[in-house]
Image (cartoon, rainbow, N blue to C red):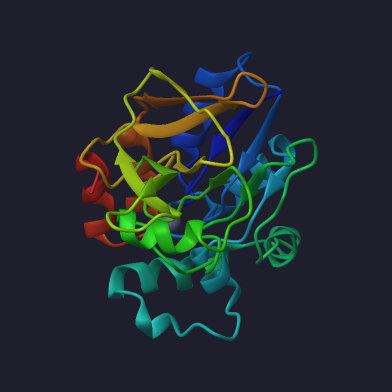
Amino acid sequence: MRVLILSDIHGNLAALESVLAAAAGQYDVAWCLGDVVGYGPKPNECVELVREQTALCVMGNHDWAVLGRPGINVDDFNPQARQAVLWTRAQLTPANRTYLEELPVTPVQPQGADDVLVTHASPREPVWEYILTPSVAMENFAVMAKGICLVGHTHKPAIYRWQCYETLAEGVSDLHQMATVDLLQPNPDHAHQLEISPTQRFILNPGSVGQPRDNDARAAYAILDLERLVWAYHRIAYPIELTQNQMRAAHLPKRLIDRLSFGW
Ligand code: ZN
Protein backbone atom coordinates (compact mmCIF):
# COMPACT_ATOMS: atom_id res chain seq x y z
CA MET A 1 0.00 0.00 0.00
CA ARG A 2 1.33 3.42 -1.01
CA VAL A 3 0.06 6.25 1.18
CA LEU A 4 -0.06 9.90 0.23
CA ILE A 5 0.77 11.89 3.37
CA LEU A 6 -0.70 15.40 3.56
CA SER A 7 -0.23 17.78 6.46
CA ASP A 8 -0.91 21.39 7.42
CA ILE A 9 -3.04 22.30 4.43
CA HIS A 10 -4.33 25.39 6.25
CA GLY A 11 -7.11 26.32 3.86
CA ASN A 12 -4.77 26.66 0.89
CA LEU A 13 -6.89 25.07 -1.84
CA ALA A 14 -4.55 25.91 -4.75
CA ALA A 15 -1.71 24.12 -2.96
CA LEU A 16 -3.87 21.11 -2.06
CA GLU A 17 -5.18 20.74 -5.61
CA SER A 18 -1.66 20.98 -7.02
CA VAL A 19 -0.41 18.28 -4.66
CA LEU A 20 -3.32 15.95 -5.47
CA ALA A 21 -2.70 16.46 -9.20
CA ALA A 22 1.05 15.85 -8.87
CA ALA A 23 0.58 12.71 -6.78
CA ALA A 24 -2.29 11.28 -8.85
CA GLY A 25 -1.78 7.62 -9.74
CA GLN A 26 1.13 7.23 -7.33
CA TYR A 27 -0.79 6.26 -4.18
CA ASP A 28 -3.54 3.91 -3.04
CA VAL A 29 -4.83 5.85 -0.06
CA ALA A 30 -4.31 9.30 1.47
CA TRP A 31 -3.90 10.27 5.14
CA CYS A 32 -3.95 13.78 6.56
CA LEU A 33 -1.98 14.81 9.65
CA GLY A 34 -4.24 17.72 10.64
CA ASP A 35 -4.47 21.50 10.39
CA VAL A 36 -6.81 21.35 7.42
CA VAL A 37 -7.87 24.94 8.15
CA GLY A 38 -6.51 28.17 9.67
CA TYR A 39 -4.44 30.83 7.81
CA GLY A 40 -5.74 30.13 4.29
CA PRO A 41 -8.68 31.49 2.29
CA LYS A 42 -10.58 28.29 1.39
CA PRO A 43 -11.32 26.35 4.58
CA ASN A 44 -14.60 24.78 3.45
CA GLU A 45 -13.23 23.64 0.11
CA CYS A 46 -10.19 22.11 1.82
CA VAL A 47 -12.27 20.28 4.43
CA GLU A 48 -14.52 18.94 1.65
CA LEU A 49 -11.56 17.68 -0.41
CA VAL A 50 -9.99 16.06 2.66
CA ARG A 51 -13.31 14.43 3.56
CA GLU A 52 -13.62 13.07 0.07
CA GLN A 53 -10.00 12.11 -0.66
CA THR A 54 -8.50 10.85 2.60
CA ALA A 55 -9.12 7.68 4.56
CA LEU A 56 -7.83 9.19 7.77
CA CYS A 57 -7.36 12.62 9.30
CA VAL A 58 -6.38 13.72 12.81
CA MET A 59 -7.05 16.94 14.73
CA GLY A 60 -4.52 19.77 14.43
CA ASN A 61 -4.11 22.70 16.80
CA HIS A 62 -5.62 25.15 14.31
CA ASP A 63 -8.58 22.85 13.67
CA TRP A 64 -9.00 22.75 17.46
CA ALA A 65 -8.74 26.54 17.77
CA VAL A 66 -11.26 27.13 14.98
CA LEU A 67 -13.73 24.90 16.84
CA GLY A 68 -13.28 27.05 19.93
CA ARG A 69 -12.66 23.99 22.10
CA PRO A 70 -11.76 24.41 25.74
CA GLY A 71 -8.06 24.08 26.47
CA ILE A 72 -7.06 26.78 24.07
CA ASN A 73 -7.27 30.49 24.29
CA VAL A 74 -7.00 32.06 20.83
CA ASP A 75 -5.40 35.04 22.55
CA ASP A 76 -2.31 32.81 22.88
CA PHE A 77 -1.99 32.75 19.08
CA ASN A 78 -0.11 35.60 17.42
CA PRO A 79 -2.47 38.38 16.27
CA GLN A 80 -2.48 37.35 12.59
CA ALA A 81 -3.05 33.67 13.36
CA ARG A 82 -5.84 34.64 15.76
CA GLN A 83 -7.50 36.83 13.13
CA ALA A 84 -7.35 33.93 10.65
CA VAL A 85 -8.79 31.51 13.23
CA LEU A 86 -11.74 33.82 13.96
CA TRP A 87 -12.34 34.45 10.25
CA THR A 88 -12.25 30.69 9.55
CA ARG A 89 -14.65 29.98 12.42
CA ALA A 90 -17.19 32.34 10.84
CA GLN A 91 -16.80 30.72 7.40
CA LEU A 92 -17.17 27.03 8.24
CA THR A 93 -20.40 25.34 7.20
CA PRO A 94 -22.15 23.26 9.87
CA ALA A 95 -21.28 20.01 8.05
CA ASN A 96 -17.59 20.90 7.81
CA ARG A 97 -17.53 21.98 11.43
CA THR A 98 -19.03 18.63 12.42
CA TYR A 99 -16.34 16.83 10.40
CA LEU A 100 -13.59 18.72 12.23
CA GLU A 101 -15.25 18.11 15.59
CA GLU A 102 -15.09 14.37 15.01
CA LEU A 103 -11.37 14.24 14.18
CA PRO A 104 -9.37 12.13 16.63
CA VAL A 105 -7.30 13.98 19.22
CA THR A 106 -5.15 10.99 20.17
CA PRO A 107 -2.65 9.17 17.93
CA VAL A 108 -4.25 6.79 15.45
CA GLN A 109 -2.98 3.43 14.24
CA PRO A 110 -4.26 3.18 10.65
CA GLN A 111 -5.96 0.07 9.34
CA GLY A 112 -3.53 -2.23 7.56
CA ALA A 113 -0.49 -0.45 9.01
CA ASP A 114 0.20 -2.13 12.35
CA ASP A 115 3.57 -0.54 12.94
CA VAL A 116 2.51 3.04 12.13
CA LEU A 117 1.15 5.81 14.32
CA VAL A 118 -0.45 8.97 12.90
CA THR A 119 -0.69 12.19 14.89
CA HIS A 120 -0.57 15.93 14.31
CA ALA A 121 2.16 17.07 16.67
CA SER A 122 3.88 14.31 18.66
CA PRO A 123 3.12 10.88 20.15
CA ARG A 124 2.99 12.22 23.71
CA GLU A 125 1.30 15.58 22.97
CA PRO A 126 -0.78 14.79 19.87
CA VAL A 127 -2.07 18.30 19.18
CA TRP A 128 0.47 20.74 20.61
CA GLU A 129 4.11 19.69 20.92
CA TYR A 130 6.67 20.77 18.29
CA ILE A 131 9.28 18.15 17.44
CA LEU A 132 12.05 20.39 16.18
CA THR A 133 15.13 18.80 17.77
CA PRO A 134 16.58 15.29 18.22
CA SER A 135 16.24 15.64 22.01
CA VAL A 136 12.47 16.26 21.83
CA ALA A 137 12.23 13.42 19.30
CA MET A 138 14.15 11.15 21.72
CA GLU A 139 11.64 11.81 24.51
CA ASN A 140 8.85 10.88 22.13
CA PHE A 141 10.52 7.69 20.90
CA ALA A 142 10.56 6.67 24.57
CA VAL A 143 6.74 6.69 24.72
CA MET A 144 6.11 5.33 21.24
CA ALA A 145 5.77 1.60 20.70
CA LYS A 146 5.69 1.68 16.88
CA GLY A 147 8.34 1.59 14.19
CA ILE A 148 7.07 4.72 12.44
CA CYS A 149 5.23 7.80 13.67
CA LEU A 150 3.98 10.38 11.17
CA VAL A 151 3.78 13.96 12.44
CA GLY A 152 3.21 17.43 10.98
CA HIS A 153 2.73 20.68 12.94
CA THR A 154 6.21 22.22 12.46
CA HIS A 155 5.72 22.78 8.70
CA LYS A 156 9.31 21.57 8.23
CA PRO A 157 10.08 18.25 6.52
CA ALA A 158 12.23 15.98 8.67
CA ILE A 159 13.31 12.41 9.32
CA TYR A 160 14.21 11.55 12.91
CA ARG A 161 15.98 8.20 13.18
CA TRP A 162 16.22 6.41 16.53
CA GLN A 163 18.88 3.75 16.84
CA CYS A 164 19.67 1.55 19.77
CA TYR A 165 22.79 -0.51 20.24
CA GLU A 166 24.53 -2.40 22.96
CA THR A 167 27.93 -1.38 24.19
CA LEU A 168 30.34 -2.64 26.73
CA ALA A 169 31.12 0.21 29.06
CA GLU A 170 34.68 0.39 30.29
CA GLY A 171 35.26 -1.55 33.48
CA VAL A 172 31.77 -3.09 33.32
CA SER A 173 31.12 -6.61 32.21
CA ASP A 174 27.41 -6.22 31.29
CA LEU A 175 26.22 -5.07 27.91
CA HIS A 176 24.45 -1.82 28.23
CA GLN A 177 21.93 -0.23 25.86
CA MET A 178 22.48 3.16 24.27
CA ALA A 179 20.07 5.03 22.03
CA THR A 180 20.70 7.96 19.70
CA VAL A 181 18.45 10.11 17.53
CA ASP A 182 19.66 11.71 14.29
CA LEU A 183 17.85 14.39 12.35
CA LEU A 184 18.21 13.56 8.66
CA GLN A 185 17.31 16.25 6.15
CA PRO A 186 15.11 14.62 3.52
CA ASN A 187 15.95 15.36 -0.12
CA PRO A 188 13.04 16.10 -2.43
CA ASP A 189 12.35 13.29 -4.90
CA HIS A 190 14.80 10.99 -3.15
CA ALA A 191 13.56 7.63 -1.91
CA HIS A 192 14.59 7.21 1.71
CA GLN A 193 14.76 3.55 2.69
CA LEU A 194 13.41 2.98 6.20
CA GLU A 195 14.71 -0.17 7.82
CA ILE A 196 12.50 -0.81 10.81
CA SER A 197 13.77 -3.16 13.48
CA PRO A 198 13.82 -3.42 17.26
CA THR A 199 16.93 -1.24 17.06
CA GLN A 200 15.79 1.33 14.48
CA ARG A 201 12.63 3.47 14.36
CA PHE A 202 11.50 6.73 12.71
CA ILE A 203 9.47 9.88 13.25
CA LEU A 204 8.66 11.33 9.82
CA ASN A 205 7.38 14.80 8.94
CA PRO A 206 6.26 15.45 5.33
CA GLY A 207 6.31 19.25 5.68
CA SER A 208 3.33 21.48 4.96
CA VAL A 209 1.05 21.54 1.92
CA GLY A 210 -0.34 25.01 2.50
CA GLN A 211 2.21 27.05 4.47
CA PRO A 212 5.80 25.70 4.26
CA ARG A 213 8.23 27.19 6.79
CA ASP A 214 11.59 25.90 5.59
CA ASN A 215 12.36 28.79 3.22
CA ASP A 216 11.01 26.87 0.25
CA ALA A 217 7.64 28.25 -0.88
CA ARG A 218 6.64 25.10 -2.78
CA ALA A 219 4.00 22.77 -1.34
CA ALA A 220 5.41 19.71 0.46
CA TYR A 221 4.03 16.18 0.71
CA ALA A 222 5.29 12.61 0.94
CA ILE A 223 4.40 9.15 -0.26
CA LEU A 224 5.04 6.27 2.13
CA ASP A 225 5.29 2.83 0.57
CA LEU A 226 4.34 0.48 3.40
CA GLU A 227 5.51 -2.70 1.67
CA ARG A 228 8.89 -1.46 0.50
CA LEU A 229 9.28 0.87 3.51
CA VAL A 230 10.26 3.81 1.34
CA TRP A 231 9.63 7.45 2.25
CA ALA A 232 9.58 9.68 -0.83
CA TYR A 233 9.22 13.33 -0.02
CA HIS A 234 8.32 15.85 -2.73
CA ARG A 235 8.01 19.59 -3.40
CA ILE A 236 5.71 21.03 -6.01
CA ALA A 237 5.22 24.57 -7.27
CA TYR A 238 1.62 25.83 -7.05
CA PRO A 239 -0.08 29.11 -8.03
CA ILE A 240 0.83 31.05 -4.89
CA GLU A 241 -0.60 34.33 -6.33
CA LEU A 242 -4.00 32.67 -6.68
CA THR A 243 -4.06 31.85 -2.95
CA GLN A 244 -2.73 35.32 -2.12
CA ASN A 245 -5.45 37.00 -4.19
CA GLN A 246 -8.09 34.90 -2.44
CA MET A 247 -6.61 35.96 0.91
CA ARG A 248 -6.73 39.65 -0.07
CA ALA A 249 -10.36 39.26 -1.11
CA ALA A 250 -11.08 37.75 2.33
CA HIS A 251 -9.18 40.59 4.08
CA LEU A 252 -6.81 38.15 5.76
CA PRO A 253 -3.66 39.71 7.31
CA LYS A 254 -0.99 40.94 4.90
CA ARG A 255 1.77 39.20 6.84
CA LEU A 256 0.09 35.81 6.26
CA ILE A 257 -0.26 36.65 2.55
CA ASP A 258 3.37 37.73 2.17
CA ARG A 259 4.93 34.77 3.96
CA LEU A 260 3.62 32.31 1.36
CA SER A 261 5.98 33.85 -1.23
CA PHE A 262 9.01 32.96 0.88
CA GLY A 263 8.08 29.83 2.78
CA TRP A 264 8.54 30.99 6.35
ZN1 ZN B 1 -0.05 23.85 11.10
